[in-house]
Image (cartoon, rainbow, N blue to C red; front, side, top):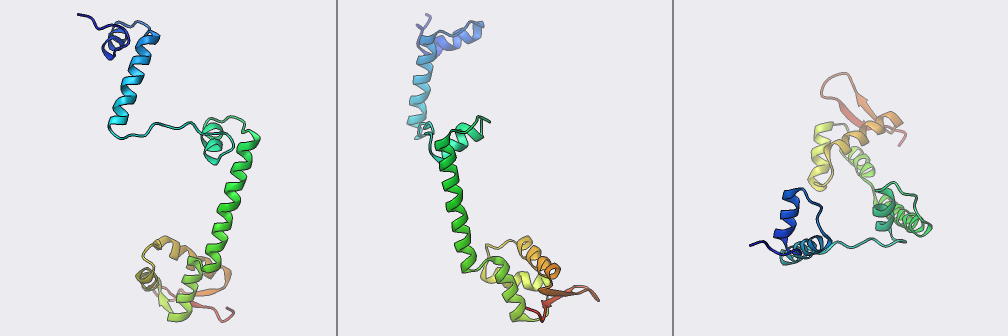
Length: 160
């Protein structure tokens, strides 16, 4: 016995036969799948609203569409707040300042020892971040590197 249109079985039958699916079958499958997702605890997707940051990202940036003025304003506000949070973090002390402080405190030190000392107190700091910070100090003249033997020793310049 064939299931009537509006059921998942009828929708599958249309697809198997290569027929275009009717609106009743599409609606029935949509409702059935929506109920399955809710039964699993999956929240329904929300459509982003214009004039919000998510609206800017999902409606304009992701699709390549020209952003509307409310979405541009929301995006600009988000960026201003994000930058302000970053400046507040820098005022408390950035990882760059932490690395420079350790160099001043420990004197001439090998890079691996410096990384271990910093990560002991700040495990969230990535090894490459520390290495890049110290190499930037050397380039800027804030620190020195003794290249005469390996492993290299690093220290703070007298100018600091």
